[in-house]
Each structure stands twice: as C-alpha cells, then as structure tokens.
Length: 74
Image (cartoon, rainbow, N blue to C red; front, side, top):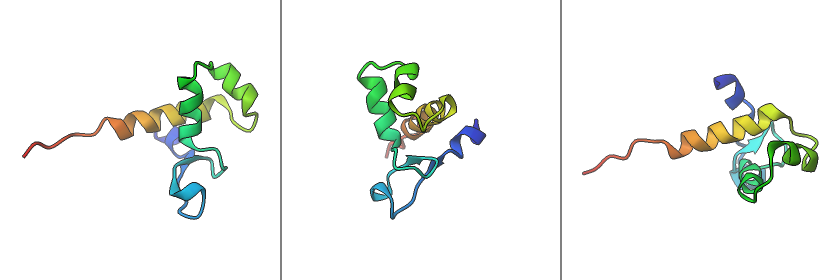
C-alpha cells in the first residue's frame, strides 16, 4: 500500500501545493470529485487517459489516511 502512496506527490510550485498524481497536474481532489459525481473507475480512466487503476487506488488511500487521523480531546 505504501508503494501506491508514492504515486501521490506534493510540490509547492504545482497546483498550489495540493496533492497530485505522479507529478502531473491532476489533483487527488479531481479524482475524488469524479468518483463523487458518480463516475466509475473505468469512466475516470477514459476521461483521464494519463491515469491508471493504481493511480485511482492511490488517491482513495491517500484521502482515507488523511481523514482517519486521531483527534485529541483536551
């Protein structure tokens, strides 16, 4: 799984420092928005031919890990 996460890159000079797929100007949020709009993985890959299935998995894993962090209560 960590191998998939290496596909997510963050460059402060690209896309406002937002996480992107493999250094391209395709943001993780772009992929998530397409899933949220109801597109299937196959449809996203047709829409964005520079991506592959592992890129989509990486975006989902990245988002899941960012949301699943401990919350400390004071």
